[in-house]
Length: 121
Length: 328
Image 1 (cartoon, each protein chain N blue to C red):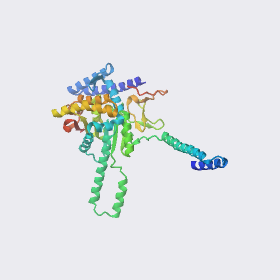
Image 2: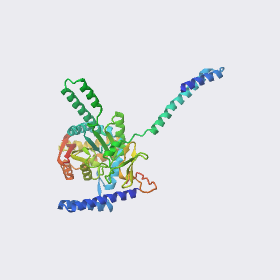
Image 3: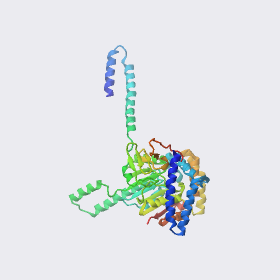
Image 4: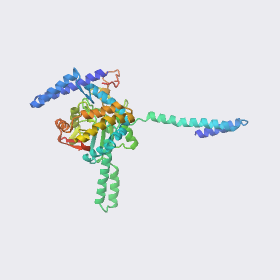
């Protein structure tokens, strides 16, 4: 698509600046087009990277339990956490890997969201 | 925030300790002793920290886990390279021997604790896959002239791996090591039947009686409370499940022991500095090997945790020992 735009640009400018020697204009345009063409794929890649998060394997829930109470957990897709209703804590899932360290879990009993910083517990 | 989390944890632990004490009180004198010591431990946790070893240093128990975490966080990226350099590639042989001793059949579930970069889990999946192929070939050979109907049903059953699916779960307390492992898996294109979980060996986030095999390779010496890790291992294994532990141990031959000591203390930290840029982490690693109990003592610890048929094999003259026990 860019190439078509570039071609039309080149022909238009070439048409306008007939007096001016074409070589530097075309060089400048191709350089500009090359840089913009190279940046466009990067832009689309970064968009894709932000959206794609490795999915959580729900088959783990068969035997994954809360390390404190050894009771089953519920997967909350919205916040991407594993919730233990009884104790009111949520374990985060980072990069598709659930973090089952009690110190890194978040308390959800209160209305105010108090999130733990991973301190040296 | 962390403080209230800690209080919650202690409350749950104290409740569970109290239940154990009540249950043990009716038991024999020996278990009464154990309950006494566990309540003592409970009190000491609340009031003052007991100390343990971090390499040749003495540190409070709460410190040890943090410092071990830092060590492995620092070495994670260069872990595999350093393993090859330090052991001259022999660690691959040790791990292969663990798999051969394990001899897993298709359909078993493996829990690899302190599995970090996933060496054991990858080998397990490869082994099981080759076993499956052998079985298929054997089955194909037995039915020498199959009809077209048989061939078509064979093709359809080959696709669904459902009943024969083996699963490997890699559990490690260190996120960095798991990240490196996951990257390796993604680059190798291995994803089926492999899961990664951040968890503490002393407090496994798994239900009882879930796994056929529990392995811990070169990780148990870094755990602060080895007996707790062993008890958790017993809990998550199915009856009939196998506990297997690869760990550095005491070299029996005195000449080899001298050479090994010289190599450990002179070469390994230097390699650590040159390759990974971290002298102190590798100093800790070689010191922690010296502080770990020897083969017989560790065998006793495994038996105390409740495992049966506990045996060990020395590899490379006792540099590494492979301990194995069963939950019956």
